Image (cartoon, rainbow, N blue to C red; front, side, top):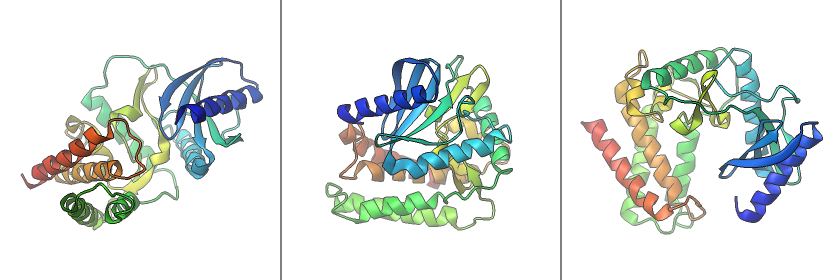
Length: 279
């Protein structure tokens, strides 16, 4: 968020928590992107603040958290002191979560695989209307095939990304028999090591697809510890994930820091990942 919007978002998070009877003396920004994560003290709550345009995503995330709490999934929970829902304040959607202080040591690949296996098992116990991951592929294709949306993308790279997204998307989604609910973006930034053990966060990315889609977001060693994983499929999913990442960087509206670097790095990572698929 830009500074002016950031100040308003922080104020909305503080006001919402205070209005619910929680004591708020200070606010620390934990993460600032399209959505804001704040730690409020001394009530010690994690507040997620998103523009109202993301209201549906915020409500979906809260619903996922509610369902998964009932099946003891290894995920961050909503704050039990307030009603588990999304609150509107100013022009923002606000949700309140339990704050988990990070602890060491680093999560091992075996522990990472274990938490994903338990999470996938929990997801098989809930019924949610979640999109298929290929919806993201379709969205990325719209960006790279529309010159007005990605005017700085060269013709050769546009063709390369279009072929990669379309080809891998079709190949991976061809057999949906093994699809299930997934975290959606189970990368290391969304896995916290806490006193309760590793917990997954950012549940708004929940979608349907093969478990290998989640494993493709994790460090490569994790797949070696996940029973029954298809390693060829993980490699294809990883290449598709890099193609998605690269497509987003070429959007005219993309605001990722150091975007010029990541445009080059993203395309190279797609090619490297595709080479590994063929190898």
